Amino acid sequence: MSSTPPTDELGRIRERIWAELAAAAAAPGHPWRTAVLATADPVAEAGCDARTVVLREIDVEAQELVFFTDARSPKVGQIEQRPEAVMVMWSAPLGWQLRLAVTLGIETSGLAVSSRWARLKMTPAAQDYLSPLPPGTPLNHPCEPERGSRGHFAVVTASVRRIDWLTLDPEGQRRALFDAAGARWVQP
Image 1: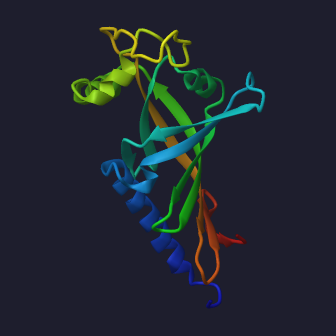
Image 2: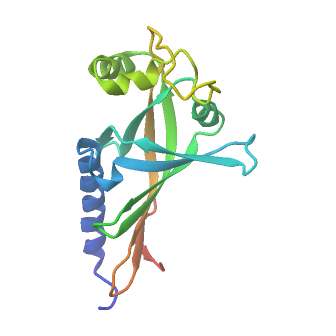
């Protein structure tokens, strides 16, 4: 392994991270398409909660990721109480792990929501937001509950505050941080 890579390599890595995130939002098979979202949950025994979300859009300029949720989901209340969260992604083909420190915002009405719902409502994915029952409601049968006529669709925007990038390489691991303080190499 060579000595510390040049600083301009950090810029190339950052550009590649955002290119891969954009690809993930566009390609259902991309390993980063599904990310683990961890939020604070003061009610949970562990004090936190984690679940997998599906990336739907990426705004590279604004450094934002977008995913959808049922507005009645417990994560909505968690986000409203504490919008700071962490998203984790792993790509085996790249050998890259991302940990993103994000600030979450939820929209349940307005143009951003209605325009996305208009594109989604005729797809099978719309069924996730049409249930008359909130997520986590106990069911007597594992069968599909009756579908409601009104969606409970919400748009969640994750504004990225920090990227913690780790690459696993046979020649040695490397790690870098990208945030308001700039880009820098750190010990893996």
